[in-house]
Length: 501
Image (tube, rainbow, N blue to C red; front, side, top):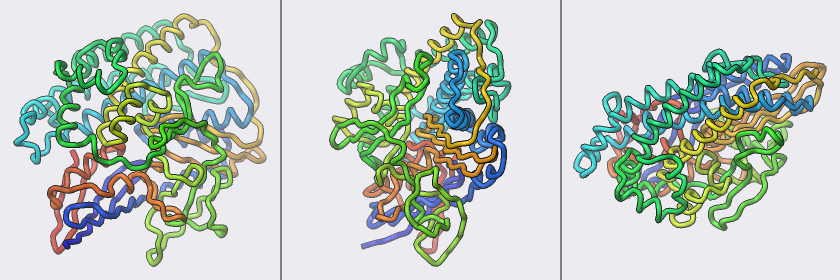
């Protein structure tokens, strides 16, 4: 039996991520997700004023800085019992939706789709069409996605002054005053994106697309539809991506798009969905813990901690079981996955639930969910803008002093569930913990020796060419790593370079 260790290095996946895989006879038998960079934001914030977090936390990530600002603001507001006015909520929702749409567009058409043009598939009948549409730098969809994603994110700059790393959300509201010109400009940007998305990606109107309620109706539509989503679906199912990369059966979402009528509620629900039992349950945030059994941190108790009790005390070692700077978040002690597919399933989206029930979780369904979510988010974005226009004279700020205490900010970033946990004493931050979506998905093992979700999703993966393992790229890309990555394959005495475009 031939055994080989493959090392896969991915840059900027909420930090730097490396994978190590054991491969026997072309099948992955074990996997380790290694966070290779220490972040340290939790320590940077200690001793600072709570408002400093609004300038510092958006810099955790250059792709989802709006989400981090939103979560940090919510944490401070929950600590001080502050409820912002409806217009402030609308502006926040608008900017978060714009950032999400931009991220879904770029990840799908600039990060994931070019892998479909890999030389491995050059003899496939769809390869010429795939190359024409998705080839990096030259594909029609690729080039238009660059333009459209740049325009849609302008909405954040219109209301927030800049993107990324904006700081326009503050406890009690937003610092910018929306006016008719800003809203009309944002509506124009949104409508232009919708027109492109309907014509080139969906091949139909969004309203019609959302009438597709199950897998059978989707398959029927794609038989005659020749747009980008159909092309991707036909090819990805033909090469078996709808059978790869399942991972954990537990899906989690914190809920997104705050309800202006009832700010404690979300227009997209929070919760837990169990694929195996086809059951939904309420999310209980006090059951979230972080385990450091396989992480380079020190804690005398060695027990999983809730983020409010969390410690971030780095301690690198090379002579024990620890292998990652990432902690291992768990819900009720279980491994969960998060992201667009989880978000839509928990919100009872019929198309996603139908696919999960008939085929289960897969790399393709995870990726398809980003296309489907864009359709729904574009309508939500338009609705929020129109609602803001109708209420343009309403206030955007509620002034209230900050107090000491503990706060929680939980939202859905583009990649999934993002949480900030804050503790303040004598007007100074004494505790700050951040759990990102990638921390959930790319976690290391825990005290029970449970693999993290991505680690699980790679087990059993068949690799056609170990010197050029494109299958690894498909599975990892479906989890939306931040930027372009390059995979280094190490085995025997040879070193190979594999580009995940």
